[in-house]
Amino acid sequence: MSEHRVNRRGLLSEQVQDALRARIVRGELAPGVQLSEQSLSEEMAISRTPVREALIRLAEEGLVVIYPQFGSFVAPIAVDAVREAQFIREHLECAIIRDTARLIDAAGLATLQADLADQRRVIDAGDPTAFYALDETMHARFGEIAGHPRAWKVVQQSKVHMDRVRHLSVRVRAHATLLLEQHHRIVDALAAGDPDQAEAALRKHLREVLTTIEVMGLQAQPPGPPPRLRRRPA
Image 1 (cartoon, rainbow, N blue to C red):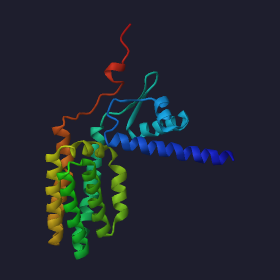
Image 2: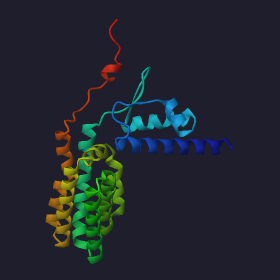
Image 3: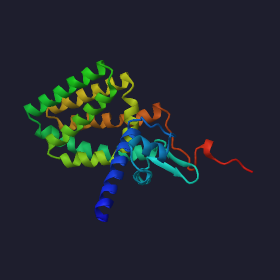
Image 4: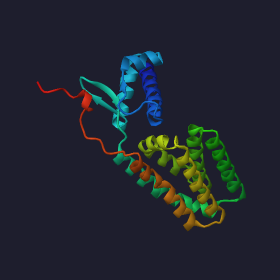
């Protein structure tokens, strides 16, 4: 019986972790926002224990910072982690896209072209959340067509910090439109069966997040509590 309760509690804390991670990555919980165990437990109608466990795990992921005697806060966007995730993603996806170019058939190409049309539609509708989801779908399809669906899952697991930047950037319509244009170039290269051109187009596309970091003025944050939390000298 006790083991069953432990398993249920563990599952609950994982669900809380997943829910809070998604809200942080989407920007619904902005950097610096305090995460009150009491408020979150009341909001989710659960005890504080799974919330506390979830916050500890999110701190291990670098998405939350826990300051003893101060509380838990949404971490700043980790620029170094974004760059590292971009490096991992670029190397894996560029290998994937070469196989995609070699293996794509008429049905796969038609699906990608339909994805492009859907992306255009949601940009015109001013729906950045839908565009982000369709962007993810298209990149997953590259892996499926190439016969490497598990490789895409590895990419997803490595890019949580990058996705915080991406969610912010797609809210700018001009930037979403630029990403769509880059998607068109990738699909055009796939349609031509040209692995070199497909890789070059994808590499340029995946490096866009590095430009976004510069445009947004994101910088590595110094260690220690935010200024407003630091104790004043006696």
